[in-house]
Image (cartoon, rainbow, N blue to C red; front, side, top):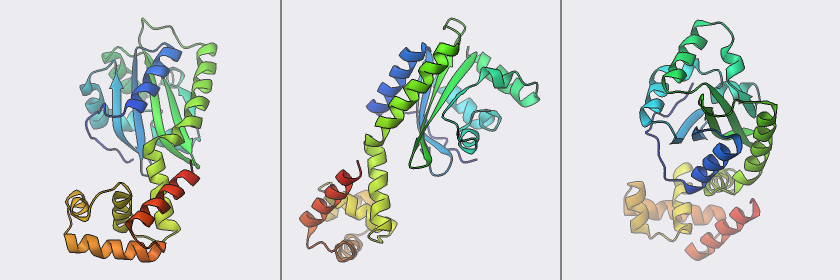
Length: 237
């Protein structure tokens, strides 16, 4: 399984809002939001109501024991899953994972996996403590409704819009990864010098990439390229 052990972050206000919305709807005092990186990796984790070392402990020792890891939910094509019934199965792995959660005061988790274009793109785990209302049938129904709402709106997030634009550049215009990066930065208004610094490449290399980008996209200049990319991006939102 792929796992990005980067430190939890709080730099995404939209993800934070999704997390708070989920906590309120499911009455959960703790939560974790993450983006799915690559095939099955987790990245840019945001935590609410649990300390950062919860995540570090999970990443170092518990990720392979998680019955609802994104990999397992992906294989099962799941969107919403409750953890507690799974932990009822008597296995050493479940016992270890259950003890890990109880160490942080967590007795149940409702996991939501959000999909776009046939692949998982983000996940939200809503963690229940003993003081929180237990998960009931109504809570599961609310979780499915929450999932539908978030999944419908999530493709508008700038992160996913940028990923779609990258796919268009590479598939439609046959740009390389580096050429796509240069094209995106040009569209953001960066100068060649700024692009060179951003990508840690030389100025002549930026100019060469840009010439290739203009030729492949049929654009006459930077302004035309920026307009073309804006049109492509808007056309897929």
